[in-house]
Every structure is written in structure tokens, then in C-alpha cells.
Length: 137
Image (cartoon, rainbow, N blue to C red):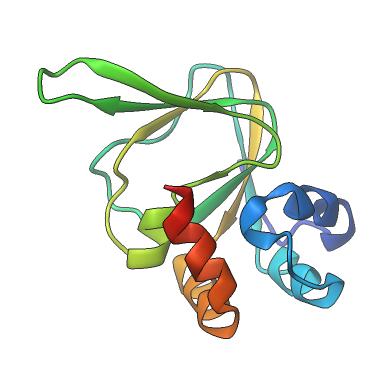
């Protein structure tokens, strides 16, 4: 279920935990929060698939998500387990390309989505966010 423009105030604490955003002001975080949408996922539900068109930045608001990558031998490799305050899809959001991993909710989860266009504008206005994105993955 997609819910447009969740109220910004409860989201600021989550955004502050996202390493990409921890140097931003309250005003900047509020601006980001106003551009977010949220989606709920059941445990076991795929958030995005490796190779699928991407472009958006996602943040874990509640729950946890498993991130996997397929090896050249076609085996699934665990990349990470992401919890509240973690971000997903940074590279895809940064370059507009497809997702390089598969993400699946481990528990019931609520993820926040920032459209790639908004994320790239944020990176242009705050180059430190772009550098953090490049270093994070």
C-alpha cells in the first residue's frame, strides 16, 4: 500500500539516523520528508530485484530487510541485513540505473521512498551527500 506524503515530523528522527543525511539541517530534513512516500511490505515480500529498473532511494523506517546479490555461479550471497535508519538503492538513485541487488523484507517493514530526481537535486545542493553515497557502497 503506497501512502503519499507521510507527515514529516515523525520521519525526521528516521532521516537523522540515515548516514547520508546526518549533516543536514532540520529545514533540509523537513524538505526531504515532504517528498517521501512510504510503502508497507510483509515478511518475505520482495522490495526490489537485482537488475530491475531503479532510480529511487529507499530508507527503512520500520522492520528489517535482507539484501542479496547473485554471484557469477548463480548463488545468492548475503550482502547485508538492513534495519531502521538504513538506506537502500543509493547507487541506483545516484546514477539512475537498475538495482544491483535484491532486497526482501525479513519482518513486516515500512520503507520510505525518495524519487531519484529529488535525491539527485539534493546531491547537487549538498555535495557531501553525493560523496557519502559513493563511499557507502
